[in-house]
Amino acid sequence: MSQIAQDTPPPPVVSDRHIDPHSYPDGIAFLDGQYLPMSQAKVSVLDWGFLHSDATYDTVHVWNGRFFRLDLHLDRFFGGLEKLRMTIPFDRDGIAEILHNCTALSGHRAAYVEMLCTRGASPSFSRDPRQAINRFMAFAVPFGSVANAEQLQRGLHVAISDKVRIPPASIDPAIKNYHWLDLVRGLYDAYDRGAETALILDFNGNVAEGPGFNVFRVKDGVLATPAIGVLPGITRRTVFDLCGEEGLTAKAADVSIASLKAADEVFITSTAGGIMPVTKVDGADIAGGKVGPITSRLMALYWQKHDDPAWSTEVHYP
Ligand SMILES: *Cc1c(COP(=O)(O)O)cnc(C)c1O
Image (cartoon, rainbow, N blue to C red):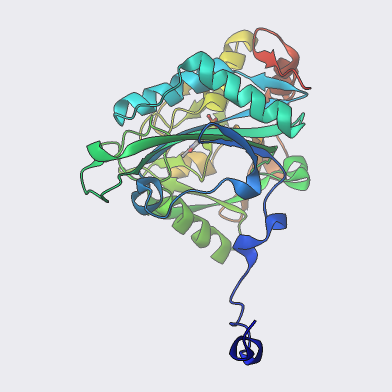
């Protein structure tokens, strides 16, 4: 090493968080035909997925070593690819196998398993999306939930933000996507008001959805969830299926802010956490601040289905 180099102080460390492998969750990714530790799964800054949010994805979870409703997640993912005119070198079975391998290699019996495809980049940095080489990736990391254990017990505190979800005429909400600036701005509104998470509105001013979750309200034993401008969640769909089995009425319909606040029970739904109770909306108690009976019943049924072979598939660990 030269004298100059020895005498030169090292450059100031702004943040080494992004190069610290310990800052990555423990898990396995699939990228460019290889299975890698999460810390080595990197994408180019020139990828359209990064530069333009030009990507679609899906997340399925594994609980007790079993995928929950994997077929429905694959259907939605392939639907997104087709609508965005992306092509990948794997079919459904190929992707199912990659997701199985990521999970099995990770060893996680409770996992959050994501498949995603970005537009990719073109060698010439062309502005024509047709020139980009689409990129498929997948990973399995420990299961994560919108609500933590305490929040699941006592119910979440939610604020309704005035931010409007990107309208369906702009982005078909059935394409699961990373256009989250509306949702993230909603989250900051919620934090500013002392709430834990947010719901944002549809273009008519009714309640739409939150960051990665749908919402239901229960009134006089009838369930309703917003019909338009929301991602058709698989947990949302599962609530409809469970209601069918239980003889409960559930409908997709407009949910006004007033009707949400006047509900007997409110809960949110996501692969990241399942069915999660809400006991405060904009600072006011729902159902006297207690988790309601229909919410509790659906939560129990939801987790029971995770062992049912009709609703789940086993992961074979090495
Ligand atoms: C993923 C997601 C949901 C929840 O969908 P699930 O299939 O139940 O996980 C809801 N809204 C948005 C915007 C999402 O990205």
